[in-house]
Image (cartoon, rainbow, N blue to C red; front, side, top):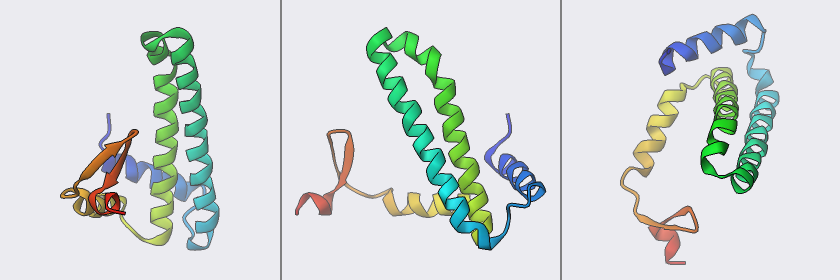
Length: 120
């Protein structure tokens, strides 16, 4: 299995071969990213449906690969978009972690709410 950096290089090479790496294509690439997010949501909703119908264990074997593939598609579109606008995806992830690592708050109904937002 390749690590993230190796996969990123492979994806960039693939995108280069497909003539996708142009800054003027960022709006189109962003829409492709949104499309992939909605495809993931559709798959996730399907997984929830089958979990209710068939139970957790059976559902895992049916949909986990589909969910993984959809998340992979999201990563691909983000890596290409980052390249188009000249930013490093791992740097973005590092910056986001630095922002959240000391954050306090509560998880309410499955959503983390920042401490400062709880006071409103």
